Length: 102
Image (cartoon, rainbow, N blue to C red; front, side, top):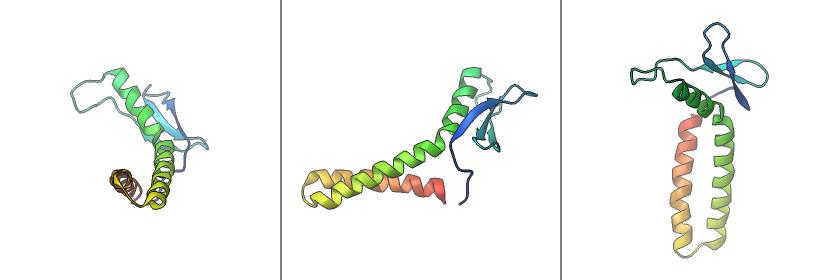
């Protein structure tokens, strides 16, 4: 899957006054609409959704970093309960990364 590289930031569409998520080099990634699925157009909810979308590249990058560190710890310790608990977390994180990138 291809996606626009981050970082992303939130701006305002000057015509609609709705938040838009843009890449630093300019292209728009997403426009957040007034419709929230709950029959409301709560500005705080709309802005929060835009901020969450804008942080997606950074969140993905950091999740990959944390997953790699956990995997290193698992591979280093090998025995005991801690590696098993870490492995579950790593597997779940890798599944989320796969979902986001494929």
